[in-house]
Length: 334
Ligand code: FE
Image 1: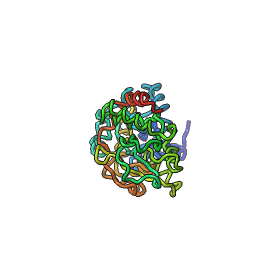
Image 2: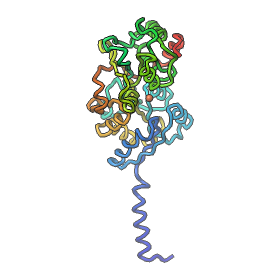
Image 3: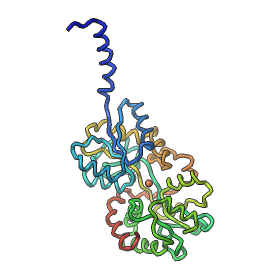
Image 4: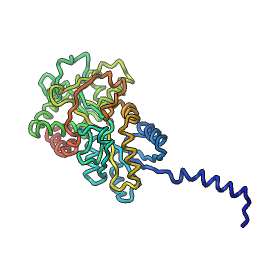
């Protein structure tokens, strides 16, 4: 076949222009955080490194199942999910592998990462007290434990114990008080309930605002979202346990999958997510706290006031999760 100069150059031009796309590095992410919470960071990462990020978002349960089923054949390099309980579970099932990175060690405090480096927290969520400002004075509040006092009889609302957030909270209490004392505390909460536990944090706060009860326990970003929609609600945040171990915190975080095919690029993405450039994007879109303590939270979040956080390693939330579930069952916390 004869080829003239023009057609040769046409082919050459197009092979060249295809080359970067075809040979570019790529990372595949499985994410329990929805697209709008993660896409901005991935775009920033690709812009800086020219590494392409493909992602697949789903709920944490199905994502873990998928990783398990796919085994060695998984296309995923990175898992992003919420709650140390879930991250711990993934690591325990052999779905994640340890990462040695000086950057991650420097950026993420030790209590917010797996002691075996299989996952690292990226944002911090505080689970704290929200109260009705017309019914409760902040001076009446002090600790999580105190929500079981007789004066709160019929005035407490809680989210269901089926949600991992409350399992993690109770697990952290077990690590602090032991099982027997924690069971007494959880029983005293159940005894004070105004009504059956709610399916989510927002409903529990709405019940407090409506006067069905006066206090509840929620993750702060739900408070932020609700107040953004409805700023006149008589609700405020209280930071408990400031003279004790501090406010219960948890993380959303990330780890490299055990069978990652693009490990180097995946570590680069994890490091990027822990860096100054991405930390605000990661935390602020969901009104959370950056895990990297050098980065300031969103002004809306800063306005809720500062607090001491519990510095027990959040991995305890996973280790003691099964014990917490059984304990809540014994305490008849539904
Ligand atoms: Fe949540």
